[in-house]
Length: 302
Ligand SMILES: C[S@@+](CC[C@H](N)C(=O)[O-])C[C@H]1O[C@@H](n2cnc3c(N)ncnc32)[C@H](O)[C@@H]1O
Image: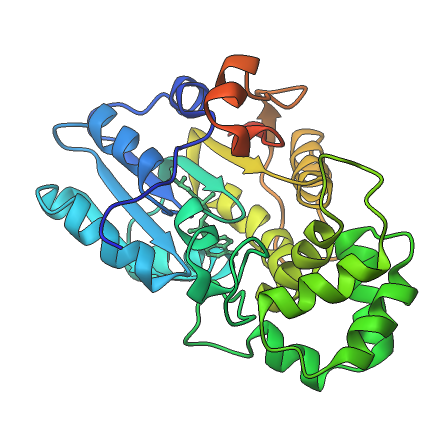
């Protein structure tokens, strides 16, 4: 798909807090449909530079068309979040004035049945941000053992009956499609919470595992802070409590000057720009229901 259906979340808040300006250098770690990249390009005109990356090659392909007139001001690369510091070093683009990571999925991925992210469309159970790499969710399920599946559902889906659900999924294998997986879960879990389909957390857990999302985030954050110029800001939008906890802990540690001894990279000192996360207004959620769980946190390098 050449055009995007994704509506950028917390757009005005991100622009206000990153304060992009002419001549600045910006990194959009999660290009998606390019909504925030467009804002960064516009606000940093006429000579600001934006490096925009995504693990998903289709986001890059779409952006090449959307931003065809941006010329050398926009550099597009397919890259994982935790590999961006090495890429930015190789391109000699750091330090940055502003960095954004808008985590999770974009609507283009969710709505494409071939990508297998959603149980509302039938499609192959894939769920990879980068389908050229590693195992699809169907292959992963086929190869995993029951304790690992149970742990993934418990830790990444926070499912109270993770062991029961894991056993049912494990026994139903091979599961090749999104509807097969949805049906297994649906039979098992009664729908107590009307807002949340029982398969939602199972799909979330598998997606996090397949793409190694939390480990990538935890590895990336200190290095992204280290790529900021003094006074430069890092903004992160997360969509569930597991991501938000990692962002909160890293930001608090950097703002309190606590070095992260367990990592071989020291954590540069920052100040918290958002003491509490910024959440979308009710008007934004009414316009774009996918924004409802978004939380924005920002730090500034000292
Ligand atoms: C919420 S969308 C970004 C939307 C974008 N800000 C916009 O305005 O259109 C998240 C994007 O990040 C990508 N992504 C998620 N986690 C990633 C990771 N760990 N490394 C690289 N890309 C990632 C996904 O492929 C998806 O395209």
